[in-house]
Length: 147
Image (tube, rainbow, N blue to C red; front, side, top):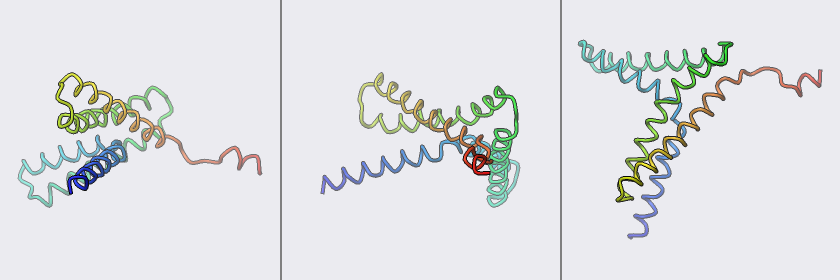
């Protein structure tokens, strides 16, 4: 029974890490959506209205980022947009990793070290995914060679 609990815990940690890496790009839209929803709720909107405002704000943030990455020509501007998406993902990666390692490692120095490694890994993953958004679909060299 103890071995089953250990295996289940490892599976849960693996699932959460996979979820973190998969959803890292959406950290900025989620933050904007949560902030807009909290603002709407604080100004008197009921829960359905606050959820709607948050969802619309998150969708607009993601759409604006996608459009900027896709259609803006200067590389430095694309880099600024990518950093805007990668920085919250790296911060979320730091805190997620720290939440896991603080239960496993007693030394605070090693906890921070592994948390920084987790932040770098999540940040790189988010950067690769954001850079993948910039690849506009178009005719490939193979299609051009066939024509």
